[in-house]
Amino acid sequence: MKHPPLHDEKMREASKREVNAVIEGGTGHHGVSTLWTHIHPTKEVFIHQYLFETPIDENHTKVVLLNMRNFLTDREDDARFIERNRVVAEQDRDVLEAVRPVVTPPTNTHEVFVIHDAAIARYRDKLREWQSRGWRIDVGTVNRTKDKTAYAIPCPERRFSKNWAIDAIPLIGARERHKSAAE
Image 1: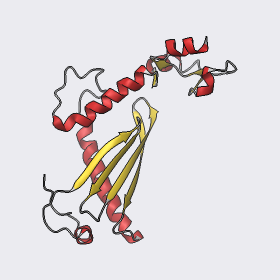
Image 2: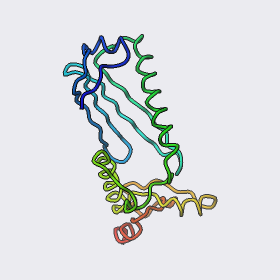
Image 3: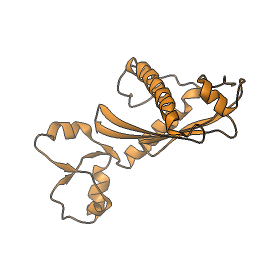
């Protein structure tokens, strides 16, 4: 697919691309909460972005964006990229606010995926894999007990030592695995 030149005049001039062209780009994830995007408007010009997500609670996430580029690197040009990222984030927000259901269904049996959804399908497969390893917090149990129980995020030492004053946060799919590992 050919993409038009960058809309911003200064960015277009800096990229040295004035015509529609195929650009190199891609996106993916590293683990459950780090997303990356690479955009190369030309062979010499690149923008690499890394998005780090930290859950605040079951409905809110803090997002930090690291944006790197090898053109227009003067401080005075930062505002141009910040504004562009703000516009993109607002477009994403506007689309996502209308999506229902709000919580992703446990299976995709009632969804229709197209070729462009391949990354979503792979990510959901990874989420299922991570959950099977016991890496998903049992939010229902935490919510039912949050006024009576303090929890700690588990660490590898917890599997071998019984000297912990605070219970490990409940994890889905982990109860039996951690129980047998502690025995």
